[in-house]
Image 1 (cartoon, rainbow, N blue to C red):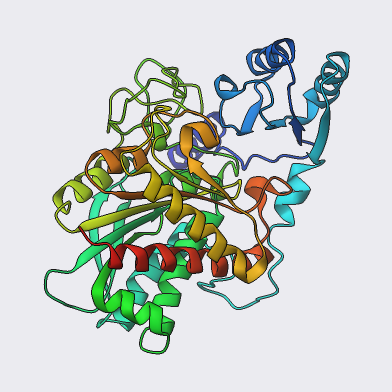
Image 2: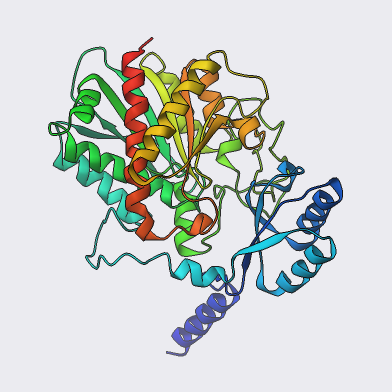
Length: 421
């Protein structure tokens, strides 16, 4: 009995020495928006980044801030008054987009759907999405199949859905969501798109024509480990969850990890930064799995669509350089037509153009990499909104965001179908 008691006491001591990390809360954290008008004001933002651990939302690194750039960043509660004083002292015009981030995050779950299980108008955790991928394929065997293209750093299976009617020599479009863990509206869109395909095939002309003549590969969440972490530990996590030898900082930015002018402009070689490019191109298991699949299917994939948030943008190559793509005129025209179509439903306005000049330079992105692999139609969507909620977009916005984005994706798909190469 005494021996058992000692074992119990030892287990309690070990458990208290290594407590399970609690869920990070953001009570009192504010999100500021500023626009620096001169180099001195840009320097103020660099000072904040170096001394206050500011979390940049848009652009995603202080290195991408230049004069007249609109900058959104999160500041922890205990630093807010100091930051506001500095902004005022520097004559930096600013507004507070979010006054209490935790309250805004709590308000995300504003859907009135009370049913348990997977819901298209709610944010679903990873386990629910994973079960959904299996069910949607089982329930629609003539239209949907599921395969595994790899495993994540933490060992989770990466399942890919293939949509389309069986056919000979069909070309394909590859679409992924959930590169950056905190961009929850992105995986919500991939799920919605699959639902729309299944729901409207055979009833709606455009979707039927697309799926009769093209296949769609849909990866609902690329950065699964990071996504899980946003549900269980810290909602604002962005990167993967891989360990970095020689550093206590975790993770790599998967959208700086591709072999497209890797780790040059707009990417960091510091493991603690949110835009860390990794130890080498495709160092992350997730990016390697995606790149391997696309390389293996290059003979059929004719378009690559990657879905992010936020800013309401439709971008095309290049982001790693200010050079224009070979078919820049065509990409520009298609992007212009696509955002016009997107706006027909809810009037949502998107900006479009090459990544580097439209927002900021960023090397190592999947869209540039896919384009350089020979995929002529490569686009990045930055979904809603323009900053009122940022990464904390409420569930009530899922439906309108996804509805309009489906229109845009169908427009691109029809164009690809009419311009096969």
